[in-house]
Image 1 (cartoon, rainbow over the protein chains, first blue to last red):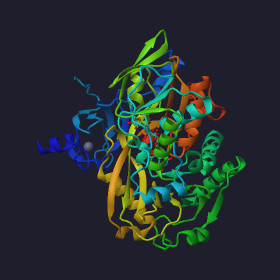
Image 2 (image 1 turned 120 degrees about the horizontal axis):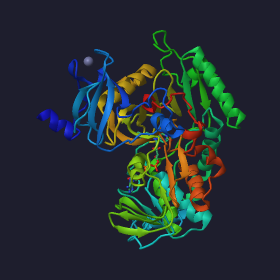
Image 3 (image 1 turned 120 degrees about the vertical axis):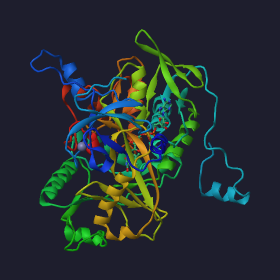
Image 4 (image 1 turned 30 degrees about the vertical axis):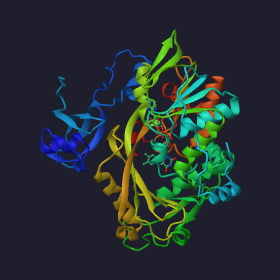
Amino acid sequence: MKRVLVQKLGLADMLEIKCPYCGERSQNEFSYGGDATIKRPELNSEISDLEWDSFVYYRNNPRGKHLELWHHTSGCRRWFKVHRNTATHEIIKTLEIQEELHD
Amino acid sequence: MKKYSIFSLIKNAFNGHKNWDVAWRDPEPKKEYDAIIIGGGGHGLATAYHLAKDYGIKNIAILEKGWIGGGNIGRNTTILRSNYMHDANNLFYDHGMQMWKDLSQELNYNVMYSPRGILNLAHSDAQINSFSRRGNSMRLNGIDASLLGREEVRKMIPFADFSDNARFPIFGGLLQPIGGTARHDAVAWGYARAADDLGVDIIQHCEVNSFDIENGKVSGVQTSRGNIKTKKVGLCVAGSTSILAEKLNMTLPIEAHVLQACVSEPVKPMLDGVVTFGAGHFYCSQSDKGEMVMGGDLDGYNSYAQRGNLPTIQHVLTEGVALFPNLSRLKILRTWGGIMDMSMDGSPIIDKTHIDGVYLNCGWCYGGFKATPVSGLTFAHTIATNEPHELSIPFKLDRFHTGHLLDEKGLGTKTWIS
Ligand SMILES: Cc1cc2nc3c(=O)[nH]c(=O)nc-3n(C[C@H](O)[C@H](O)[C@H](O)COP(=O)(O)OP(=O)(O)OC[C@H]3O[C@@H](n4cnc5c(N)ncnc54)[C@H](O)[C@@H]3O)c2cc1C
Ligand SMILES: [Zn+2]
């Protein structure tokens, strides 16, 4: 409870991220991998330049809930997903890499 | 506007400084403007100033959701430089450097421009090579730069770690002598006062929520203080760009990230210019009050929170202490953060949009303060003439489509790696 409150109010002095494989660890152990909703166009499929541009460069960049990739660099070294609020830094949920978010 | 001068200072001193004019008015929004600038940061203020001064558009409003100086313009570490590699960046930012020289006179406001040099340190032979390449690129564009050896650097910053124990020994550095700093608040206030004097309405606490668009043309904006009509709208909202772009059905090659900075307790003069550590990301200058002003990496995840976390501050200051061991004795007074509009190639975007009358100024990453004057100049040109200024042609949005990227650091799209 206290932890949630502290994170909600942005009073935490670091992020505490729950790796789905290792459990809760400090932010220092992780690196960021960006927006997890970006889908690479299918291999060998006919795509427009515009589709390719949006995959490489364009981001929704929401203020609020954001599904993103993190890497447990100094831990199990696995990639996973974090559902996090970009306005408050509150971590709503962490998911294994193949899991989909059901809101 | 009553001019500030030594005489006005003396005159006002005699009546206890009680009769100074307000620096800018606090008007009610009108029903309609010829042009509206969203965002009263440095870029919005400078843009409105140039629209009024150079293009004779007098009926202009700046709509600011907070207060003048509350955004990144009041949060940055005030470094001015034009030590880039690519021609487009060199020419653009150096035009800006020339504008800083006369800015206090032009605005009749002391922006405390202080060209005392910026020194980028190199810690390996490879880095010396790459700095000499960058220095040559600058010189080819007419920008003074010198490559310094270890002993020359030691003369400038003798208290840096020149011992045998240094983890990243200093090999030399690239010096841009006219790099330096200016007082960021004064830049905001000076532009605000000068724009107001030209008739620009600065409307604070007025948030733009959406746009009125008819047949692909803008006809007004919807704000927290009512709807306002206009035919031209310029976005200068820095870290909030994607939020407003969404209202225009635009997705942008931009991510919002938090960048922190901090100052130490004030000490006697020890550091003259700006110094950057080359083996990581740490930079430092000393303010006129004596505080060491320090910054470095982004926190490194999408954020709109205007505050970061301690691990980043600790990481940045560890680098600081590696460079200047004597910093370890200082106490940190304040830390703060601002939201950076990180573009996907690290360079800005100044352009029209697919909607007639809506113009875009964003993507400044962590380097937009130094560009304030030249951004205002070129963006005002784009808004007034509907054409890019010759200096800002390379900063059009379509470069992400044509492949003419301006990726100074070769980082690709992972700009948070800084
Ligand atoms: C810690 C830190 C250090 C930095 N160091 C340097 C440096 O050393 N050198 C350098 O060159 N640059 C530096 N920068 C970057 C520089 O500060 C920015 O690139 C630049 O200030 C951005 O332009 P601006 O001044 O117009 O932005 P801002 O001052 O952020 O202006 C944008 C304004 O838009 C307003 N706004 C947003 N949405 C709305 C809306 N919907 N309606 C109305 N108003 C809205 C905001 O309230 C804000 O006032 C640094 C930034 C930070 C945070
Ligand atoms: Zn793990």
